[in-house]
Image 1 (tube, rainbow, N blue to C red):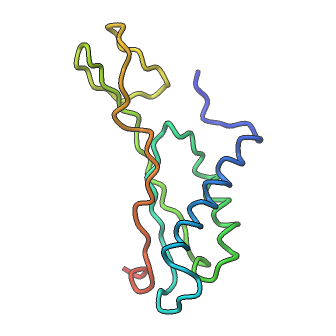
Image 2 (cartoon, rainbow, N blue to C red):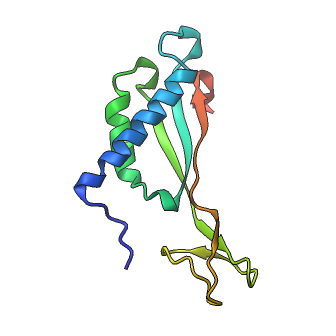
Length: 130
């Protein structure tokens, strides 16, 4: 069976991702720019194939973002994108819940979605209350 739990040594994966999100947000909305305002909800879309543990990513994001004034109230909204495959042979499209990419007809499935990682949006300043 495919486990959704990662060994402790793999949790550093989420720490690096959290740091990359912070770097990307601050690159576009630097701490020094007072007119930028405070950052609130940061929405990311994450494909299931990325094997990202949401609780772990949130923990590292909260811990690392405390060092930045504009991120002191920021939080992640993680939208999971399911793994969807397509068989070019029999034209079957399906949502996959385990990493099995061979169709019932024996052909290899193509991945249509589920491997994305998208920084979708950031709520800034006055947008936060809305």
